[in-house]
Length: 384
Ligand SMILES: Cc1cc2nc3c(=O)[nH]c(=O)nc-3n(C[C@H](O)[C@H](O)[C@H](O)COP(=O)(O)OP(=O)(O)OC[C@H]3O[C@@H](n4cnc5c(N)ncnc54)[C@H](O)[C@@H]3O)c2cc1C
Image (cartoon, rainbow, N blue to C red; front, side, top):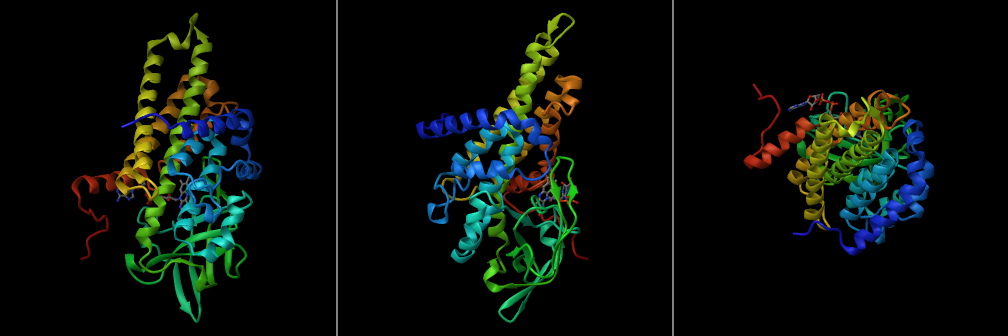
């Protein structure tokens, strides 16, 4: 058991840290307030080889590991929380599930612009009546000659207001085995992207409406029975979400540490009050232990996809630690932490969202309990 980075990982970390310190950290507060996706940062990251890190070179990726991708996303997000989202979009989000299961033709059509930082792909899973109960989704794919007709609606998708292409979970038939996924391009007749709404973390989302949207069979990523594979790919997205939670919690922690070392009240630096010292100790404990669970999930995954139980433990710990640290950091910074002049309040809003997105903390606990008892605990109401 070794808790140190390898020499290659350390070198990679150091080069990403240099880039983050010089090019990202100075604009972190501005980016936290700026609307829209940071396309300039996406293009720069593509130039630096920070998109598609764990994807095979044959797919236009870098051929690195999940651990490499975690090193990148955490180093970037700790320096500039908003820029961490770009690493998510290019390595951990639906792009990864798509790269895992998409056909060669689909990848040739859609992957290049995403890895070049010119486009994003958005995941359409959640529906107005199917959130935590994702398998209750009703958006349908009905065969029509060589095509499929898509009908239904999706909500809350990250990047849904700006994406060029959508990985949409659809129902080919009844039950769990009826679920799969398709690619739908912006501009396809019958596909409407609603007016953007804002999450409290500053991100936009648009409701997606599919009204007899005709797509070729070549746009099917996973046919009926693909749901489990889809969720296996989604575990990578969950780790990206977990990684940013810890890194953004650390960003807030660092702000509070510097503030407490400088700011004087009652004639003493804030860091000399034991009540605040203990807050730092607790933040540090939660962040460090969550980090270990995160890395364990990634290391255990090897070249494959992370295990669901490992992922649920890691995401739960990271989401709680990140939010705890951001909340305590804001408190330690007083009015300055609560002001929009500081990124502490942004960290609080961002880490709060990840406790809901990508498997809420309650759903993760349900999943962990299933691992502990080695049995399923169906949540659906019993049929009368
Ligand atoms: C920032 C953000 C980004 C998102 N990005 C995407 C995206 O890219 N694509 C996408 O498709 N969706 C996305 N979502 C939607 C997200 O996946 C859902 O919000 C989430 O699955 C919860 O569903 P819901 O909001 O309908 O809440 P509900 O399912 O209605 O749940 C409400 C509350 O009840 C709890 N609950 C529900 N069932 C149980 C149970 N069985 N046991 C215990 N507690 C339970 C939940 O944990 C939650 O606290 C995003 C959401 C957020 C906040």
